[in-house]
Image (cartoon, rainbow, N blue to C red; front, side):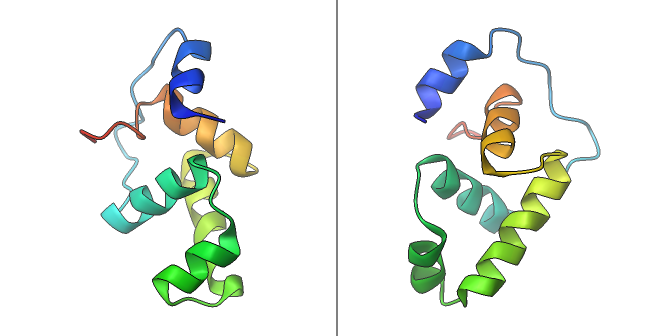
Length: 86
């Protein structure tokens, strides 16, 4: 789902919790997930195994309080974590 569409769907944009810390690499992975990039492609590009990439993605989902990719993307869009300036 395009980030711009998610922003349109999420009218109220609460701020991310103050304790939330995503590293730059986690933010980059989150953006790739939001763009629809397959885990296998990200793993190959970043030099990880697919298993490591799934673990990294699950860690990001956990930090966002999401149970899956879609929830993580929606939450990240609501909190404006996918913006280029973040």
